[in-house]
Image (cartoon, rainbow, N blue to C red; front, top):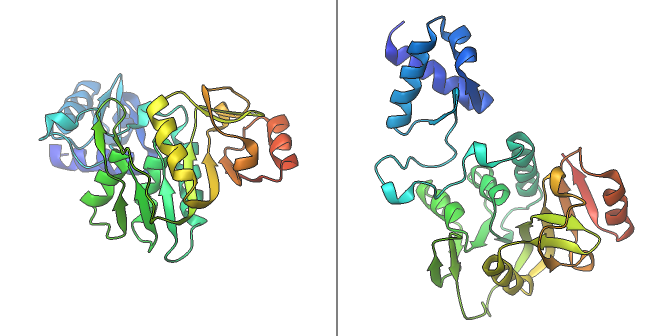
Length: 255
């Protein structure tokens, strides 16, 4: 088998499975571990996958191989505690949107995954989260409003001193570092401040929370349970906390 055919099979495998170990690729390609490692290194250099310890992972974003300043800008699969669950949460969030909805999307790894599901939609996106914005722009997404301001590189945010007086949206999609009886919590102060500003322009707040963060306190209280209308999380989420959410009339989707 030629190198080109092996490379295509590796990339096809990653599209379906997201992660691949060297041993899995050896079985797939019927070649030596040394050949697989060389192929992974070549594809990593070309920006077509990300080389990880003893394997490779799919790249979630436009290639950054020719733009050194973009390295580390986009989330990668290894950044997620459970990529498949986060992907299902993102897909469900987009599925809830209706034709020509205006939605605000906050910062976070799970909101970033909403991008690929938005591409075939007619949903109008308002956001200051640069990885998501850059991804959508790179894919020629036409329904995009960039909430401008100063670029904060450490958190990939545009921070504006002004309120967005003319904006109105159906949903505000936010992630968090924890969800308890105190509400949705977040550790990043600047993100907290910017997403607080967005709240007044959205009709409903939807929290996108990994199951491992349900029942966990994660920093500053971003929104109380009374301010949250819906939670999308994984099926492994703490059932006691799910009961608390339901008691507060919060709609819960387990994916």
